[in-house]
Image 1 (tube, rainbow, N blue to C red):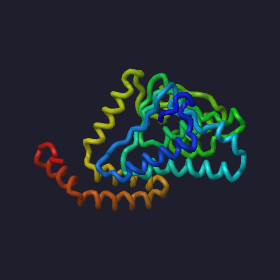
Image 2: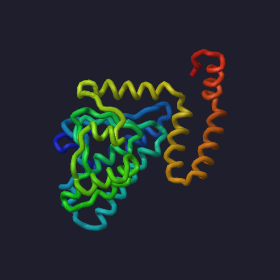
Image 3: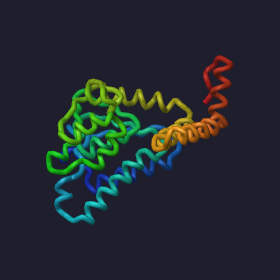
Image 4: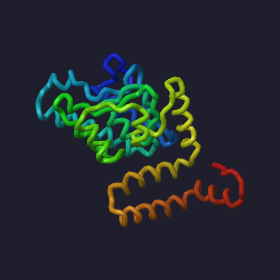
Length: 238
């Protein structure tokens, strides 16, 4: 994201560009991992408030938030693993963006908040992602107070996976991406799809989905080779 002067706020143009980039990656099955990063002091400050105030109509706001929600769901829909590389402040829809990514690596200088309530606006759409990342009372604390938490707290609560010093952020993110990219594409794609589908089902349905996924995955050439390599005590030939 490259609107550093505007703290990478999610303007309509930014949302469109993000959607186009994700859709292009979705069609490229040779890509295994996507990293979302940003330039400037902020990772993302949420929606562009100046743009939002320029058209104060219910129809506009419904369209805007529906569009943003579609893009957040697109992050989970694409088969590739998506990693947020968070170098700075992530607030409101920016914090939502971090929460929607499959994984997140954060600079120790980053901070996180869903602070719309301080402006009289409860962060309803960010709450969907946030409540699926951290415990309810922690999510409600952030949503009701608008307070910031630092990167260490975000990691402890489960919003991010890893916190490193700023000069180590890119290296740490690429290291994680490379570790995942070394795995077979079929397993990564099937696993991500199953993971999010089963979360929205009861436990019996979740196990049915998981069993079917594992059975189909087991028939893939990469899984057959991986198991055979384990049996023969050799590295798999992927």
